[in-house]
Image (cartoon, rainbow, N blue to C red; front, side):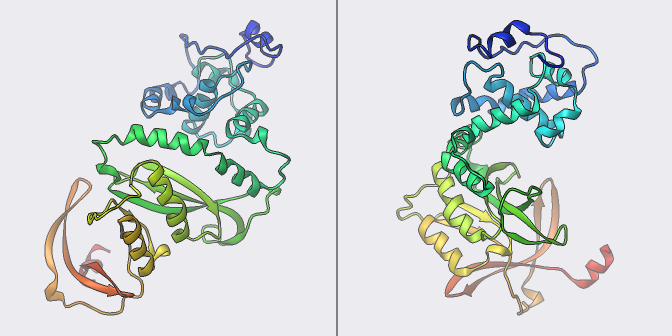
Amino acid sequence: MGEATTRFVERTLCPLGKGSHATPEFEENKSLCRAGILFMLPSLLAQGLLKAKEVFRLPSSHYYGLESVVLTLAFMALARIKNPEQLKQCKPGEIGRLIGLDRIPEVRCLRGEIGRLIGLDRIPEVRCLREKIKFISEQQRSVHFNNLLINQWYHEDNREDTGFLYVDGHVRIYYGYKANLPSKFVSRQKLCLSATSEFWVNDAKGMPVMMVMGELSEKLQTVIEHQIIPRLMEAKLISADIGHQQEPQCTLVFDREAYEPAFFQRLWEKYRVAIITYRKNVRDQWNKERFESIDVQVLNHIINMDLCEQDTELGGCWMREIRVYISMLSVYHHL
């Protein structure tokens, strides 16, 4: 039956189709490897980890139920075990006690359960990773799960943290050989590599709200307008009906990658979404006398800054431009 297996009756009945999911039972143990992870279990449950049961399903005849698989994946992340293959280097019985069973799933078993959760068992023969990603994204189950978590994290009377949403893209390099993914120069490795892009949306406290996956060649503007905005509407963080509203529903903060005044104007007119970003190609200088010394709270610290604000026309659109005056003498002093 495998290493560290002790629940023989349940394991024997499941392959015969007469068993059911093994019930997690937490018992007293001593000198258990990585047992400190259990201190994080209440936090994981409070964040809605087991809401996955409302979205995903596993066959009832399998030994490992949904709770066991989800806890295994969560504890793998906390223990910095990056993929199922690395479980071969761990003691299965030790981590199995952490999820309330005799041992964790074997690598091939865990991969199979993950495939069933995301629907890969229902895919016709798919040889390309890009087609798999497209199929998974069309299932909408992960989106539904994300919306359930958002509804728990941000109640109707607790939406202040979603007033400002920070959007940033990250490159995830693909090290396999089966996928036909586009290649692009990756500055971190200083090489032209195959990869995908992950676009993360974080709230005002830096906590993750959602993640959108795209191809490496996708632009941030396209992702914001055609993926992130619809997801925010689906999660009811913003509304599609703006009426005569003049206040922003939320403010998106991103870097210069999505800089285009016409794009900013489109977001405001269609969705009442404001933006904060860096201005490109700044050549003019403002008079030093126009800057005012203002105390600004950054996290838990009060910092004095010389600030100036004025209205600026960019591409036929009027916007607020704020600049910070930094003298070269102060920069030299801090260096």
